Length: 563
Image (cartoon, rainbow, N blue to C red; front, side):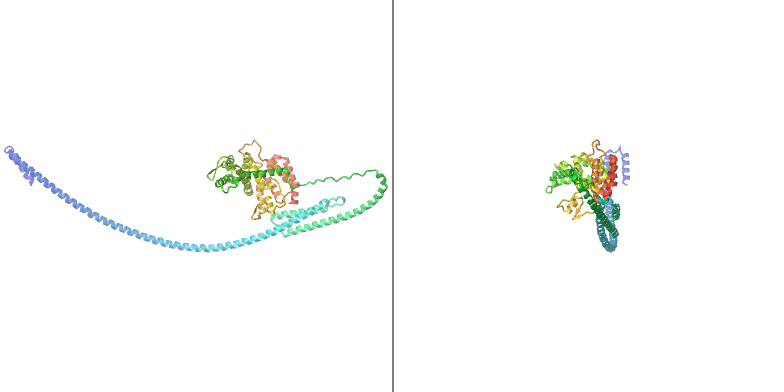
């Protein structure tokens, strides 16, 4: 409506513009003021409505926010309630499962206790049974050994009696009496008893029937000796009677010729000469024993040379050096076996570097003999000692391991001869038969000490069993036989072997010149020839076969007599 009035005023102004210009200006000013006033009122009203509307919107937002907050709280409470219920259910399930598992565990424990009780009863029964078996076996062995000793004593007496027959095979005073029947029967009885002993030794121990058989043979031999002596006595009496008759007859003739013979000098009585007894020796040749003693002296000098390291209980630093050097020397040797294969080169290099003064790694530490002035002597001694121990341990159970051990030792020996000399000293002390040397018991030496000298091991005053002793000796002889024929394949082969086949040939010759020992000699000869017999045959040819023929025809029968 206001707008229509304004339009009317404008029309009047246009009509009366030219007529009344002053009046028009005044009215225009008023109209403009009214318009501004109207616009201001309108703007204020609009602003007021906008403010009210904003307040309404804010109220609506606050209401919505409050409602949403309440709903979120209810949702959180519901979710917390549900989670708590689930936790309670899970806890109940776990408690139930735990109770069931505990019950099952108790049941299993009870079953285990019951089974353990039964098992302990069975173990006790088995242990008692084993002890009974061991006691029976011990008694059986003692009885068997006693019977075996009885067999040996019978055999010894039988051989001594048989020796009484041999010198009288053709009696020097009774050339016409033939005693061959006694000698043949005596040899048959000796062969019978020797074969019986060999058979019983192979199957274990002799039975009472075997002892009875040998005792019957002994009684028969005694009867043979008695019959032979009676026959010889009768023949001697007859010969004595005839000699007396001839003497009386010759006496008459001598009386007639007494004057003629008084001018003739009596013939000089010649002695029967010195009879050289042929047979085997009881002692090793003097030159070999001197060599043996030189090696033992070298070993003792080596021990004296590292006395500070050997007695280092109060010095922690030296003790640590000693331990590291000993590990560096012995661990590589322990790694050598019949299946070492490609590791031999690595083992050889470690040992060679250690002896050459170069540092080697042992258990993560660098070790060198230059860490102590006596380090080299100590390593040489322990290294040689370890090779011998490895021989009597590893080789005695695995014969093939003798060759890899020997090839490494041969290479070290060629580059470091002192190790070889000390090795021989250790070997001869552990196994005097490697010299060969049969030590005699000196006056004042106890039996225990003498057995140690012979190579036996003694623990808590108990001597090791013969089988274990022979197995150790076999291992060391096999190692020695492998050393004399092998050389390190990567070394300089232009020079001579540091301890070659000539030493093995000397050992074999000296061994065959000594009286055989029961058990030991035959085993050592067999082990030695098994390992290096082929090499000796290639080296010595016909001489080797002559030696084998001598063993077969002369030495083995002698072993049967004395063994």
